[in-house]
Image (cartoon, rainbow, N blue to C red; front, side, top):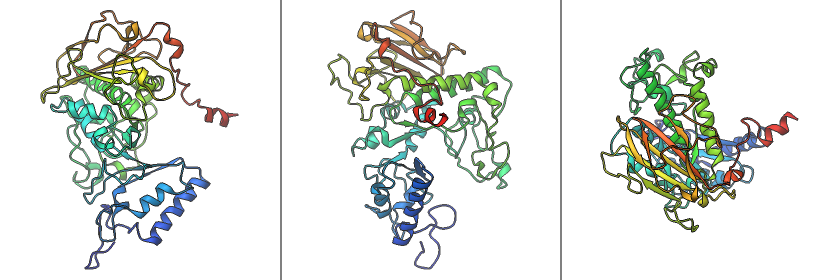
Length: 430
């Protein structure tokens, strides 16, 4: 793309930008993707700075971009996932409005920002959090795209790792050779009282609790969760949030962390298993906040320190919700009820739990990030019964997840497959 004066347009941040909707360029892009899909059996593609793909030769956004439409309806790419980073370096931000043609999903940048702010205890985020929990209907409900259009993430290859998000207030990119001027400044991070590594046991315990909170909330939100390699075992980049130029331990994955932070790895594995075990967390359609199944409960209900009474005020830092499993639309029978209480306040809060437990069952503790391992999480089906069925203390900066099952319903519990042992992987091993 060239300006009228003959200079390069730069919407990529790399010096220039291809005119992707030129017929020749568009043909090259499609041919490359077809080749990767047909010859290398690539399952899907994530497009960096994808808003560029919808610009005209002068850089203005098109209402009906030819390239995006061609990719959406291409017969060879028909079964490939198409995921857009729905913004670019030129300031075009299209999260929730990316030209999707019924096919494209988006990295949900608003999910990332809202979750980070809530996790570190910012005020005024409860309302936004409720939207992200439901798969962002404020972004994807108006056009009928559904929660699967939302790729939910808290960290990615750009920016802080999940560990660094709670260990650093500021970027530390001196090793990149640009006098710490490169990389983003808006990290929405919190160092928990000390910048970088520390031997303080209280700070280290808080950091691990916040990491577990992030995993817990990510895995109970509607939409498609995305995680960053190494976050499951506490990987750090020592505060560097722009390590693209580093071929050293800043970017390498130290597999020794799996043993060093075995408690974090175990928590992440069990949270993934929890999500797979409960179809109510994976609806293809947005929740209606209504009871359309005649179960006596809406598909999702909102609570606070008092049951059935969420605090939506600007100063609120607590929120709870309950999912009715009978509204799950996955085709799998599962009548579990899931109750999630999130406390990002610096003080312990007492939550009143909906009583009696739905379906004539009892509440069981699946997750309590305020407890040390191994009592922070239990494998699906092994959750201990809650002693006080009416109230629960949620410690500062903690998340609690309860499940209520109808008596005798264990036979309907969806048992997750052994990690790495899907039908496809079994066939390959044969």
